Length: 117
Image (cartoon, rainbow, N blue to C red; front, side, top):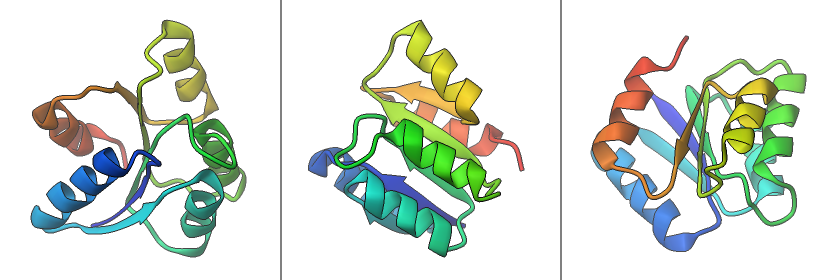
């Protein structure tokens, strides 16, 4: 399984990449919105994990670009934005799930198993 992580917070991004890599997944890590969108559109992924607040373009727009391009792999938002309106907005844009930071590793791991497709 190949996973794209788009996360500008170095510690969180490195933690996710290392943990998922150790679990046997192939992981690409982008540090800003434009790089994340470029990778999402040019590579084949089984899952993307997006932050909302990214340099360049926000995670919302990254997701919109992914869906406009016809890419239908599951997308999980992993973000500090925890208001109900933010969660609803992310899901309405086409995210498959929305998880807030800080997160429990066990919860993040179980959500990967429940995503559609």
